[in-house]
Length: 306
Image (cartoon, one colour):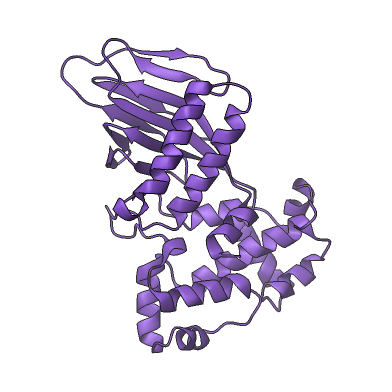
């Protein structure tokens, strides 16, 4: 299984559309801070708008998606002449539709969120940029157009099964986002799931599939066919984190999955993800998830591994 599919499966991510927005002229949509393990997203199908949050704004064009892994409060602002237009909201079977009074819609925007599985989902999204802005280019525009057409069609249908279909489309969209290169607006906006360098991608894949191996920087550098210093520099630049931090996070994602789906003891899980000391593993797991392994297991119903 490829790395993006593997991560999405372990993190148990589920997409939901909260509302569709059909807007004309100047308007402001306010979004409060989300609850823990909810990551809002906005998919713009038509028109232009600006996403604003503390200390930063993101201009969006048709085909753009913005994902906010930490769930901060933010606003969506549309532009045009005249005074700000009033918003009305009509309920629907699957989700409501917000619209402005007067004028034909110029902006078609889906606002939704992803629910994150505890543990693995938390750790995965903690490795993503605070603002993930992806503009799908000409090479990938056709799949996005197809997704957009299907989402619009389901929104217009708004009947039995619409919520399930749109949720599945949101999940497909997330996979496309996680394998795409984000627009870099601030230094550090990099996406390790979409590493472009083939040598570094080999390292990522190796760690994902063998998190329990006692990896050293020298071994990872050799796998990448680079000197140690070159590897450290290039890996950090490409992923936004050190190789050691990356290894720890992947181990915590794997550990959360093992705790949730198996009867392995905490000590056995620690060994499975590369820790010789159970106490060191417990400390690292608590730091990554704000929970001890034992408490995490108690609070999360176990499911058979697929």
